[in-house]
Length: 103
Image (cartoon, rainbow, N blue to C red; front, side, top):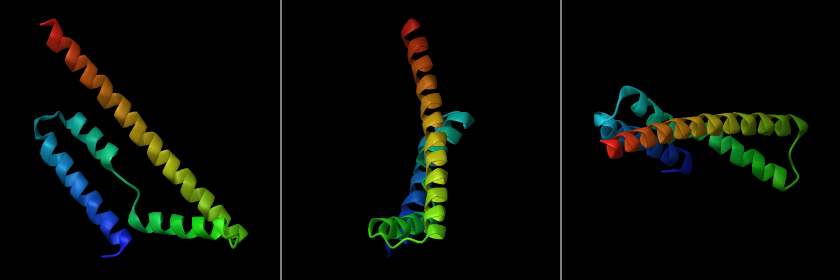
């Protein structure tokens, strides 16, 4: 199995595990966990690697460089979404912890 296929398989397993573990969680918490565990699709990851290699070997065209910048922007946006989900679920966890100790 090549790397992109393996990454796609692992992402699917990760989502499945998140859903199974989240059965006792609220719908929102489940959504957050799925967002947190969601990776970048395998073809985009592979293209990023190809373009990064070209950049490092100084064999990248201006069009490819622009494509690389677009992929980087996409990845950064996805990372930001994952971070927002992490912050929200962490906040919910703290709130649950406080109410547990206050009882």
